[in-house]
Structure formats: structure tokens, C-alpha cells
Image 1 (cartoon, helix red, strand yellow):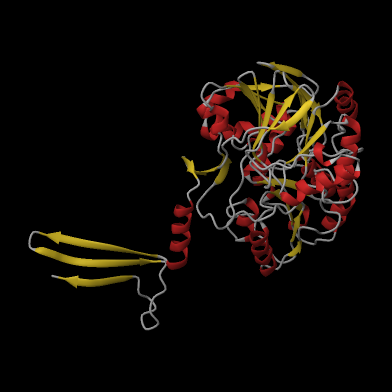
Image 2 (cartoon, rainbow, N blue to C red):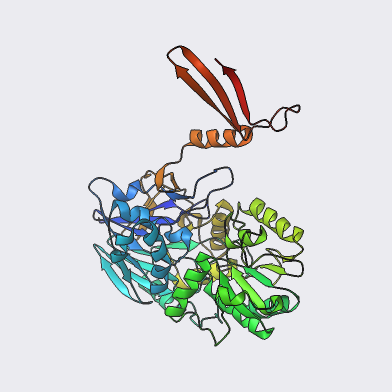
Length: 501
């Protein structure tokens, strides 16, 4: 009997590193290939990627990569995959436009491997047929992916919600999802990130009025911090600014690149004079400007971080300004966000932090949305994906409430697999998984010893010993201290001359 194996390589028990390997007839599809930004106890590391070794097992072929949408936690590791195996990458034009800058930095020649698909399009790769089904999320061009495989049918929801009044007017295609249910769906892989929240996720349009009210109450310049790819929120910020007589400027690479791509592809429409260039914004009165920028997670070096620390020459937080956070707080980012909020407050700004009512709505399904997806698709089996343990458990709880027996709901860890065959789903073999670090041009296995050494150096500093040797012996020894707290009686001590011949 022909089988299909489904194995998550990342994204289960964590928010990031999303990657699902689907294997049949010696060929594998990767659904998403994302990264994870490191916690504060991993100094110096740019980001983490999943160990992709399972995609390159001896004798196995990699048919291609299917991307559900353009967020880093779903596509950030693609350049590292393509460096090892140049295979086609499929996604909507907006998704590929958000991937392109990452390729330009690390693997420019790989842009020839990008294959844009329209929502509703079907592509064939080896033994698989995949259909891209449009869904609503916090970035344009998001899709669920339905896969016909030799062992059965599966549907990966991607990140989604049911928004009856989306900003861009492209709702989740419920009819297409229902058609997959009508054909008989063996396995549904369901987004879990918002499932612990009761009810349905509000429409993106619910943010419009609170955002305009917040802008109108700020006497000085408005700084709106959001995710760089949240084009819909950028559109709402422009509309809110227009309502209170402001012009909008974009600051920071991620926000600027995403908005440029969205305008080119028709996802962001801007009226005359509503969006001004950064140089033109410098001469405008503070009360006439809204700055939309990245850094909503407190990332050091981000646009908001630079503004809050006075490192942007023409955009610095001043008394009377307002800093508005319009994004969710990614777990683990709390300390960095609190430090950044404190910095803005110290500079005299009003801060509307994460969680301020009305200023953000999730792009992920609440418990009611999960229940609705189950009703539409009627899967025989369910695999919660994309979330911490509490999120995965929340999807399982919704399924039980909708009548799913425990034998139909699978709670896996990364590396554990399921096998689809003849309408049945069973546990499969464990595949190797792990994490790798990326730092500059370097990449390698995550080494706890290396990280421990870095943390130790960060706490204690370092002493560099310089010894001058001559034929007659030691000419001198100098100890240079970096990051070492000097003795109380020698507060300026940084260099110690130990001996001279």
C-alpha cells in the first residue's frame, strides 16, 4: 500500500521554525521553512533555523518548497535550504516578494528558482498535486495548501482567520475549503497560535476607529510600531493619519520593502500626498507626521529602537510625541519590549503599549475559527501545528468539543511523524530534528557550550594578556581588561603593566 509520511521539522512547541516535510514515493515536499529570532540568553546569534537534514536524506529527492505566506517564521530559512539543494519555491507574488530581499542578501542566484502562483492555482511536483487556497491573515497573499499525495489528502491551513470584512477585500475562501472536505480529507494541519482565545478573531477593520482616535489624541509626532510585513496595518495607519491631518512616512528597511512590494502588486493603495518620503518628512511640523516603523518586539537596532535611543538624526522621540504599539507580543520578547517602553517614557513620550484595547487584532484563529474550519473541512484526523504546547492543546480541546475522539487528534513533537495510507493515519518513524544558528555568514549546530562561554564573558568580561618575548627572556607583560569591573581604589584601571625587563 502506498504511504505518505508527514513530519514536522519545526514549529511544534514553539512560535517559529515552521517546516513540515511531506514524503511519498521517495520525494519530499517542504511546506514552509521558517526561522526563529533568538532569546536574550543566546547573545550574538542573528536567528535560528531548523535542522533540515531530514529533507536531504540519502536516496530521497526534494521536489520543492510550498510557502503559505510571507512571514519570517515561515520563510526565513529558505535561503539556507536552497544553498544545499536548488529546488523550485512556490508562493503567491507577495510571499515571494517578501522572500526576495532575504535571497538577495545570502543567495542572489536563487531568485531564478521562485515560482509565483495565483490563489486557487494547482501545481504538480513529483507525486504531489498542491492547491493554494486564499486565506485571510495579517499579510497579503496568505494561503492554505491542500496536497493530494499517494497516501492520502492533507490540508495545511497556514496562518489564517475568518475575516468577513478584510482591509483588502479578499476573505478566506470557505467554499474551496469545503470542497476539500467534500473530497474526503485524511489530515488537517491547523494553525494553533490563537486557539486559546475564546470565540472568533475580530475583523482587521475593527482597528480603524481606535487607531484614528489614538492618533488624534497625540499632540506631537506619532510613532506606530508594527510588524514590517503588516501591510494592512500600514494602510490603516495612513487612513488614520489622513483623518487627523497627518502625512505618513515609513522608516526602517522591513516596513519600506514590504510597502514597496505591496504597492507594486496592488495590495497597498495610497492617495496623493498621503505617503511622503523620509527626507520630505523632516521639514514638516511634528503634529503633522505619523512615522510607521518596525521594532514592535523591542529588537536592538530596529527602527523604533534607534528612534527611542536618539540614533536617528531626524526622528527622535520627544516630549509630546506618542509611541503606539500595534502588534502582538511574541513570547520571549517581553524584556526587550519593557526596556524599550521605559526608554520612550523617559524621553517624555506617551506610550500605548501592547495589549491596549482596540489597537491590534490577531491574524490567527480563535477557538471559534478553529471550530468553523473543522466544520468546513470535516477531516478524519487533526494535527495541531504552529504554536507552543498551550496553543496546540487548545486546538485539541476545541476538536474534542466538536466531537473528535482522542484517536483522531494527534499531539506530536518536532521529528515525530504520521503515516497516511488507505484512509488511515498512524504513527510513523521519528526523523532527526534540531536547531542551527546563523551568525553573519556563519551557520552551524546550536552549541550550548559556545553559548555558555558567551554568557560567562558577558557577565565577567575578558582579560587579554600580551607577552613580549626577546632572546634574552620576557621583555614585558601587559594585561588589558575589557568589561571587567576595576578595583574600588583604581576606578579607571583598564591596562595593567605587570612587568618590564
